[in-house]
Amino acid sequence: MRHIASLLAALAAVSVPIQAQPGIGAPQPAPGWHYVGLPDSCALQTHVSAGARTFEVSLRTPPARDYWWLEISDGGPTAQRWGTATLKASNGLRTTRFFVEDRGPKQVTRIKLDKDLSHWALTQGKLIVAAGSVQVTLPQRPDEQRLGAIANCKAQILNGWGISPALANQAIKPPLVDVNRLFRSLPYPADAFSKNEQGDVDVVLVVGETGTIQSCHIIESGGSNSLDAATCAALEGAHAKPAKNNKGQPIAGVVAQNVAWRLPFKVWNTGSTH
Image (cartoon, rainbow, N blue to C red):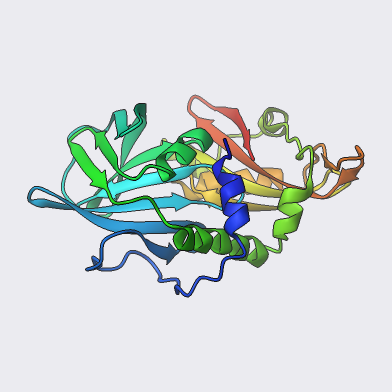
């Protein structure tokens, strides 16, 4: 089974006559998914009616990662803040976790779809999603034109960071970063500590062939400017094991990393995703 990263790579050359639109726009009169370019991620959006409610639904994915976020909002209050989400299609049913995030006046139900779940969800003709008080039926699966737009969007973001998409794909073994070692002796950021802030920060790192981490780019904020800044400050200039090519030689490479900040102070390395 081809995973979604391969699907997006294959579609990267598709010519897409769709222009990126900043932010979330007004409901579209036509059914189906609509491409939206965001500063640090790429999204498909639609609006779905369920009874008297109209939900804004996004499928969003950051560059250099294989996962997608399924985000659902109708601007109304949501009593259940977290729990089990059910995704049902004609060929089966999957479950995963959801949580609710406050975004100004909106409450957004967020469901993280890992690589395998993303592939399954994006190939379904009809998908019923239930998470707490939210239940929506998604339109037909995104077509090749929309997925091609996502692939192009990811490549453009990487290029904007000075990262060649070819560099992100050429390594047989990606760089290896020991997050626990790098963060072990660091104090918890004072501002985040005083505000009792915790969070998971997702970053993309460019590692040179000597193992030096040359740059750090945040693709998923931990919800705290202090934690975001501390994450990249600790990583940039640090040493990691470089990527290797098919001959076992060290080469420059790109790796996506998650850093989980928790109180009492401990930084958990939840691993990298390719």
